[in-house]
Length: 420
Image 1 (cartoon, rainbow, N blue to C red):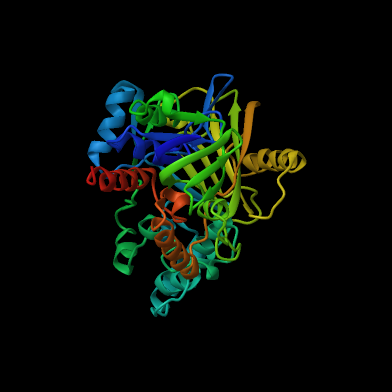
Image 2 (image 1 turned 60 degrees about the vertical axis):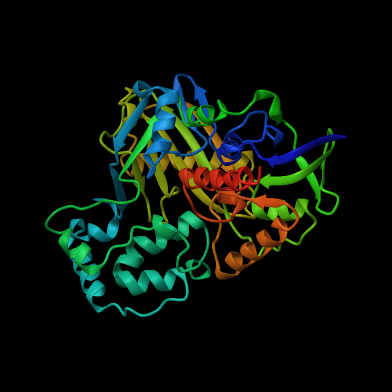
């Protein structure tokens, strides 16, 4: 039987960062796919470079950013000042919506402004109530509610008040009114970096600190016996002292034989299309938000405007419920609607589609609720008593950045390093 001190479940950035920071070399990384990276995979087709979805990197810790830049090469990493727009009811305005309502047609602007001043600023018990309390009905109904409903593919009243944490673009009344005179569209991702070669370059940068013989690619962990500390794989059993998992939390629970009720761990799927066209499209924009329900997609991003390439290269995202069936027929019909809507909103004019790719992210966005927060906290503590640690965006069933995942992984590694 194979034995290892640290069984690492999943080969995404979080677990690679953990292994890289660990003093011990007694670890094995089991990854079900044929390559590491998780959702940070890159597809190269017909001269286009796409990721599974838009992975633009936002760093608050300069040492982490510098590590990536040094390993990839400064000339191959583009530092970009974000340009984001919103398309709603035939109008283009700057993001975030609540700071730019003065760009709306006069009647819509007045409605949003009056509702902003007349809103009931009272304690909220869910995400939808928070939007109404802080921004009023006009701003909520015109953008914040429909867009986030499309993003999460769920009723916003089911989500926790703080479901998006620091990533939600909060703004008080003074911020909003001040923005009428001078634009202030700063947010957590006002600037971002992106490497030539796609998001996989960030994965490879961390992978440099992980020994190749520690990777078990194409090997999935099927079961975890917490009492005996033995994992089951199709290739045979593995004995471990500690297990570190970045797998989706309910998946880890199922491996360990623990209940994972769907009403606690709810989430959505996202169908992503990567599209390459023969000619350039709109310039000066990196992504666009679409709150209107008659548009197939909720977000479109422009890879070509990062490196100013001469052919339009897009990612297009469509939200689905967790139980939605997304088979080949659905993908084909969705692509037809996407192309029609791209023309209708003015992104595509006379360009011809010459390359495409699609992927279903499952899970995509988790639904953070008071119950899920409490259950994840409780069960992570239970698992830790057995030497099992669940980390990362899906391992902690939360909303966070890739940088946050790296910091969490390093912190856990530091705890183990302190014991030696």
